[in-house]
Image (cartoon, rainbow, N blue to C red; front, side, top):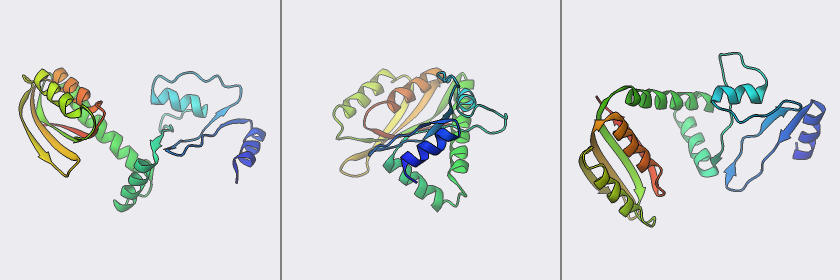
Length: 188
């Protein structure tokens, strides 16, 4: 079914199609009832309510966009791990994210590790990590650096201090261009 036929079918059903095509990104198509005012959602629950026009309190549907390479890698992993579908894998990932971060924000004091994989050839990343390491020196008890290959490095920080400070350090590192992966594991 091509986009024009799909658009005609949706119009006949009183839907307004929002179809996106892209070469680098995969876009989730959202369908919105005509005559339904669309507001900027405040939460996923608001998003699901606005997009579907209903909400039963049990399940929420929402859309995301991913780079094609990440979506492909995710699908391969989902299949390899034996998940029946993407939804269950995303559910598990979100649940783990909530559990890990909720514990951090509910504690006053945190200790654990911050593991970071980054591309050392990204301009300025080595200097930025070094600057963060100096800025958060009272929070970082120790660190180790391992070259994984000619481009990728692994850096593990042992952290201990106020939860807010540990969280700020992790967030600042996570948002740097060149950081491929970051995992904060709080043990107490």
